[in-house]
Structure formats: C-alpha cells, structure tokens
Length: 102
Image (cartoon, rainbow, N blue to C red; front, side, top):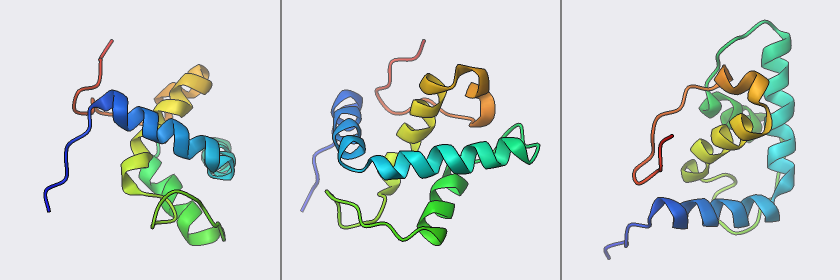
C-alpha cells in the first residue's frame, strides 16, 4: 500500500494535535533539554532528548502505535526554538520538505 505524502502544514497540524493530547512529552523534553544546558552543553541532538525520554520515562501516549513517533522529533526542536529563543541554537535543525524557511 502506498502512503500519501503529507504537506509540511499537514504534518505540523498532526504534530500540534498529538502534542496537545500528550503534553507530558513536552514537559520531559523541556526538563531534559535544560539538564543539558545546566551541564554546560551549547548544542545537543533533539533525537538524543527524545530517546532519553523513551528510555528513562514510562509514558503512555495516545494517537500512535509508537510511544513517540520519529516523525514528531523535528517538530519538538522547532517548538523549543519558538518557546526559548534565548536557547534556540541548542538544537541544529534542517529545513523539512515543504517547510517555509525564513
């Protein structure tokens, strides 16, 4: 079965919906990111943060067969940059397919 490719806006909308239904993931993302900053890191992988959540935290999430889908990770880095402009360079991001780039 061929899966239809979603636009960036559709993927972002899916993330926003998943994020609203699973706010505890963001709380851990913030906590573990600030742990990295406090330990002296200027850059870290957003994949590392999500994998730390997957490994260390018992979470039951809704809306997916996976605890945290890989397709969501890049959106968490973008949310971090929007929420914490002072620390926006903690995660290096690349332009996603179809993403408007400013």
